[in-house]
Image (cartoon, rainbow, N blue to C red; front, top):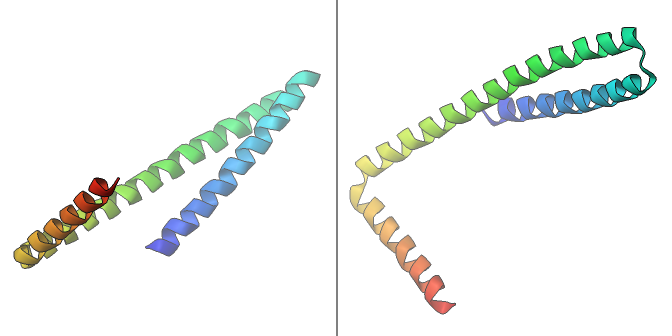
Length: 103
């Protein structure tokens, strides 16, 4: 799971860098006002934006799936060991209370 997320992250970073590069080219081309080059760059930017939106949607869906799985695993652990979960929560509360009281 982590390697897939890392791969998607690397691809997204590459796509964003490419988008920034193309945007810079678009601005330079607009300064020269060459209509043919401008239309081509605009089309490339639109394509990359669509691709990035899809990638971000994939990343969001993957993050939501991992969060649901973590919540499910936590729920199962608490149901399997309710007294241990209560003890852990109480210990965490005491630790936080102690740290806050020291300030």
